[in-house]
Length: 124
Image (cartoon, rainbow, N blue to C red):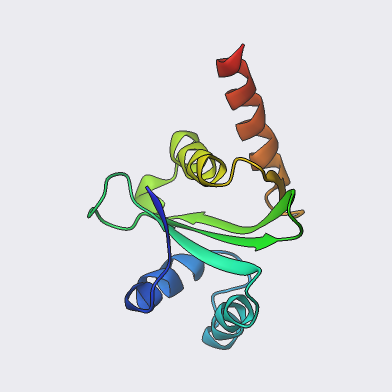
């Protein structure tokens, strides 16, 4: 279940984001979170397998326009890292925003391509 991050989730989001390369230093991490909060087109989401469960992942998105959303960050806790969970998180976002075409950054476009391929095979 993917939900928009709230102030009460800030420390958990920071912990999960800090698992990504380049965001291990607190100054970079704080700057990245501030970057999301500085613009309404950017959002941080938290992901749980079931409602009221433990937060296992987070998704950072930037809405480029009405049709394109850029997935800036996608991260899971070490014990929950699996293709199934990454795909579930992306699918949850897509279900909530069916009009958006999801694109990635250089760091995560391969993951998004694999997700897109796996979801298109299920539709056939």
